[in-house]
Amino acid sequence: MGEYKKLNIKDWAVEDRPREKLLSKGPRSLTDAELIAILIGSGNIEETAVELSRRILSSANNNLNELGRKGIDFLTRFQGIGEAKAVTIAAALELGKRRKDADVFNKKQITGSKDAAEYFQPMLGDLNHEEFWILLLNRGNRIIDSFMVSQGGISGTVIDVRLILKNALDKMASAIILCHNHPSGTMQASNADLNITRKIKSAAEIMDITVLDHIIIGQNNYLSLADEGMIN
Image (cartoon, rainbow, N blue to C red; front, top):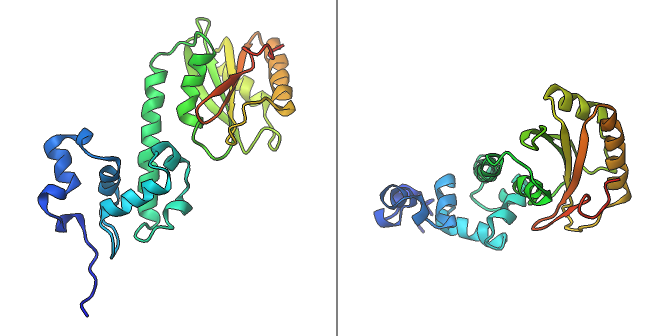
């Protein structure tokens, strides 16, 4: 019996090569699977890179956001995807998220909870762990900066209020918006959410900094504590 040979992209017919297709027709002509195939370069002994990419996408319901929620360990379960290829896919998905972030950041002004949610949704909406972030605003509610305070859940981590206020003072922020995500998708504020909101709000008032809102991000929705009358 002959030996199996891994089929590399350079072995394909020219019209089937996604790299050449991108060069001749532009990136928008490629399917999601073809774009991922360019990243991984080759498949395995039974699948081309595109076929393997299709199977990876299928395992995430053909949804790039859902694929972005998967970790490196998930990707390396596929034959032909080692750590280096998995990292390449993860990096590409993260760049896509950051491109969305840049589009929102360029607006630079927060006029309500919807604007704040749109800022954080691309960053937090598809995470499978909890993160707590702060958005810094000037007197015109224009965005100065944002930064992550903690990972792993409000109830399970210590939120350093001093660090939050130091960053706000260093950047001369007049107001801040708190934000964290609920990976479970449950859009309900917990007692821990309310307690940390009150704690930060009370400390910020001493520094003449206003806590405008605390946004909870789900996969495709959000909850504003200010809109719900829960910012006292």
